[in-house]
Image (tube, rainbow, N blue to C red; front, side, top):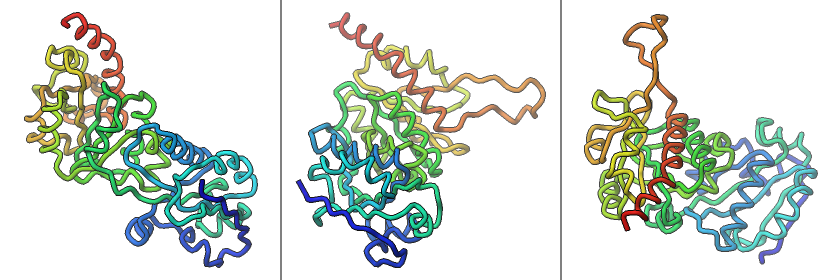
Length: 313
């Protein structure tokens, strides 16, 4: 187990904490290969996920902790988790915990949303589809994205995935960075417990996943789309061992080329606003909310589909 080195910080200009100063995601990502985690609850979830992974719980991609900057109170509350943390820290031992008063943390970071807890993590090098599939349970489903660039939506999607469980996330075609500070915060730290991968070849990956037994569903409100409840009970969807739902960006949606690769295009039936809005102003859902609706549908039909496969066997 790497030793734990606790260092007191009394000066915001202290060079030991330069990486925490005026934290900007672009600098962390491009310059240092790091990401930032903020708030006691999310730092706790980050550390707990590292501990679980080091104990053999499947995860993907594998992230590490670089260092932490905590108020004395938060350092005390996290102490038992920190000292129990095995080799989940970065290669440069020991794991360093900087302790500073909360006022100094706010001056240093330039904001107060940290609530006395900041952590720097090391970005993964294994964020590919093969690693994701190895980390997924045998019957886990997948959510894939294409062009979802807003960090709030990516964070909300991970929060949904973490809440329903048994699902992984494949981020394709320019989707936003899940380790952006705001995405981590909006996900409530679920980005550390939900298996995920990034891809620049989503269409090729969909072909590969179909060959592995995944049924493919495009989530899109098109004229030929099938209502979600009906789509999930189509024989080719219901009998599949695993399902994948592709979600697109608001406005652009799921590209037609991707829809053509899927077994079905499914929509969430919605009602208009009675005449208060123009006829062309159609109802729509935020992509993160839409992901929750589809994940609920996948979970609801999972037991029935398993029973159906057993009956056919």
